[in-house]
Length: 294
Image 1 (spheres, rainbow, N blue to C red):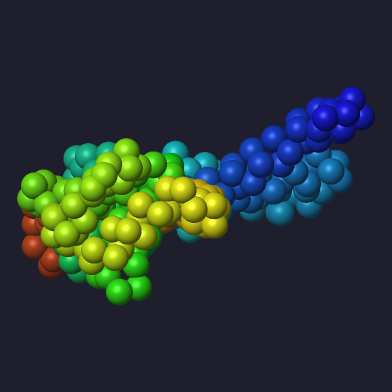
Image 2: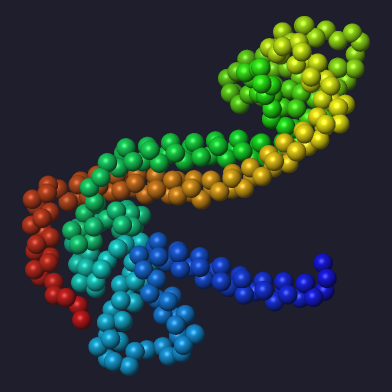
């Protein structure tokens, strides 16, 4: 790489890091607090200038929004106003509730009604857990395929797949409960033996004898060697697909944890607060006693 190119890369890298960090921060605050007004306000102040509004009523409204956004970010809630925040705090203290059980729920907790939203949380938890498990298995399989120094192939007249490299062909199976006695391996050294008992090896590998011949020829045939290299190079691109599954797995994993927390929180609140009628009466009393914060 030329010196000029290195200089350009060195100049771009800090700016690229700043942009990526900002994007990730906005996404995190958006997911955590439900809004990203605070970050946008800071960016606006940096680019345009000025930290506060000129109108006092707008400033007062903005200060309230900052308090709500900060509360949501800290406690992973979805409060819409300071009134909801104050009622929520009063409700927590009056009923001696464990805030940690509710701080995992995010938008699954209704701040206005002070209750876990209705939903089939057990079924949803199982669904996301299963999907996440499948994504992990697919990622492991694709990573194995990408790092393998052998081509995954199947003859047109055969049903089984196999690994084929420049000096060996062997069975492929990912079932941990399989009978390993069924595994087989044919090497270039074995093919060079004279005579090669193709019938016996074909029976062991459950392949046709003519395909045993094709495998042995692939170790020395220039076109076959080139084709194997092409397949191996194509397989390496699967690493990107495996990495693409990672955010999907993290989403499923996080969703399963959150849904399970919602199920547990629902049972916890039912036990702590008692029957629905008594809880509704308590909420009406709290709402009546509390005035909106200015």
